[in-house]
Every structure is written in structure tokens, then in C-alpha cells.
Image (tube, rainbow, N blue to C red; front, top):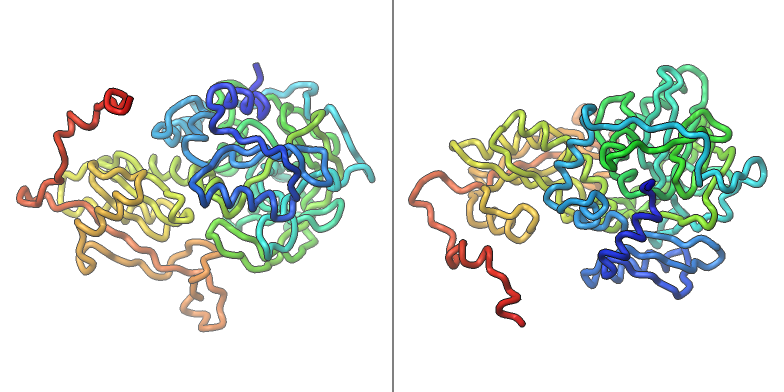
Length: 462
């Protein structure tokens, strides 16, 4: 049976009904929908939420598909501690499964072109108080490289401009940005399609950090264990998933820009307004009674999803450089800029080496290295290690003048540009929070581990 968003929701409601919340009260797509998410998050609750009635629209909205590693684990039918390994394996060509082209599919149930193809029917959400307007945040944009003809997919934010246009805000270092720049140099526009609503593995696959020319739907196939069925788009030369909920077809203009922002971003601050390319609609296709998918950009699901791609590639690279690395975690608390590295310490200095390797493997602002006895999925335990196993003048080091992110609110200009330069550089921090190998270093105090670690609480709490 084909894996898609509907089957995933049916499965999780049957197996883990406590993880799904259906809101039957009518909500507004402007702020109210996100306010419900924010309230639940503040109470420590992160269910998948289906808003069944959105004022002015007939489509329900689903959110929080990626709110925790547990959510990702359910989608992959694995455990939370295996998610990163599964993702890393799926990126390797030997287990990736190419898409399979078919003649048609449910996404072609309704086909709208010309003047009928407008954004009016889509419950595009305005998330934060000072956002520039409603944004698409969950759509995977598939583009065709005009030079190589290869397809590429990624998630970018899209501000609604008119009934038939959006911004296409791509990070400078992403593959789609490279493709569009090549098209601009050649004087042509870029065929593209924004895919909304599919099995969560599509979102996961969009975060892969592979080579230009590797198609993300191959990784999605590797995660699912079956080919993703694709169909030709109606008006542009790209292939789109046949079982998606909604596809917005169009072209990314290489000669037209529009201001995009402010926008509440994953750093949990407003990203300022900057020029972005313009996407012009040519068609919309969708399933009967489609489900609209949204990602809350200042909620944990943005960071959980965003961090997955980092973890997959960084773990593989680190193990090559430092074989004693046993696990890594990019915690939500670090807004994607912090990585915890767990090592099997075999020599003094290995913690510093691991921190240096982690900082070099990706654009992390801080890397904290800990021993195997520290749970890297527990912020409190990592902080405990930092406070009890380090000295600031010996265990901390900094690396100034590095590129981290274009939206770092504390970024500073390149030295050569003076005070008027763009704030694009950051200083990285490495922390070796491993304990010395000195046998006289104090032992961790606890009851016998073999007693409490395997203890069945049901025997005591009945």
C-alpha cells in the first residue's frame, strides 16, 4: 500500500491515539492556529494537531508532524535513538530507491490552470505577530536544473504576495540557489513545483546534505523502503509525488525580486526583511478534500526537522575523523547551532579534537563533547557535565571569524569591511566536558546501575 500523509495519520491514530489532537473548534489561520500550538508547547505538549475547521477555508490543516524525534521514529517505524542512523543510511546510494514514474495519481484529482489557479483556497498561515504576512513553511520545492536536467528538492519559506505569486526565499548555500543562479546566468527562468502534504519522510528527505544532482525523493524512497511514485507536472517540466495532497506549479523568476520579511525564524527571533526571488503560479493540482500541511517556524518541529540533515551527515563525517565518537545530538534548545558529541575517551585531548571536528563538519556555533555516561538527549545532564568536568580557561576554546548563518542576530561584519559591513560572521565555541582519565577523579554517585537501570516500575507503582 502506498505510503502518504493520510495513511500515516490513520496509522498513528490507531497505534498512538494520545499523540494526535483533533481541534474541532473553528480557528483563524492568522495567529490563532499558531497560538494553539504555542500554548500546548508551553505546557510541554507536542501532539500532531489536525485543525478541522479553519475560518474561510474548506481544507483542514495538520501541524507538528516533526515536533520530536519520537514523531520521526514513528514515521520510520523505529526508535528515537535510531532515527539519525536510519537517515544516514538512506542517503547512501546503495540503499536509496529512485522514484518510479506513473501515468497519474491522486494529486491529479483536481487540476486548476490559468486564472483558476490561485492561492485563495489555501489556508496559508500567519504565524507570528510581526510576520510580513502568511507564509508557506512546509512545502518541498522541486526544481529542474536547466543545465544538467537533474531534479532537486528542498523546503524554503514562501510569503504570499498576490493570488498567483509568492516569494522563494532560498539560503545562499543551498543547491536550489546554485541552480537558480546558473539559470540567471543563462537568461532563463526555473521550472518548479511546491509540494504540500505527504508522508513525513518527504520532509525528512528534504533535509539531506548530499551532492548537487542527487534527488531528495531517492532518499525518501530509502526511508520508506519503496519507490516514491511520481507524475509529470501539468505546466512545468518537473516530476511531483503522485500521492501528495497539493502541488503548486510555477516558475522561479530569475529577473524579479521582492522584499521578504520580517519572519519569525528558527533562531526564535524575527529575521529582517531581505530581497527574495519571486515564484509565479501556473497551476495548482490537489487531491479530493486535500489536507494542508504547515510547519510552525518558531516551534520545535522546525528545529527537529532542520537538525536531522545536520545529524545525518555530521555523524558519518565525525566517525571518519574521530572513530571514538559514539553518538551526536543537535538539541532543540540550541536553535540548530549547538551539537552534543558523545565519545569513548581513550586519550587526553580527544575531547578537544572531537569538538574541533564537529565545528568543522557543519556550521555549528558551539560543540560540547561529553563521555559515554552522559545522556546527550538530556540538556540537564549535559549542563551538569559542563559544570562539573570543565575549567573555563582549559576546557573552552573559541574560533572567531567563521560563517554560521545569515540570520545570526549577534553576527558581526568581516574585519576588512569595517563597521558598515553586513553582519555575517560569528565566533565558534568548543567545550571539552569530558572527565580526566585520572583514576582519582571522583566516581558518579548512584545506586547499583544494574538494579535501577532495568527496574520495572510497574512492580512498584501498581
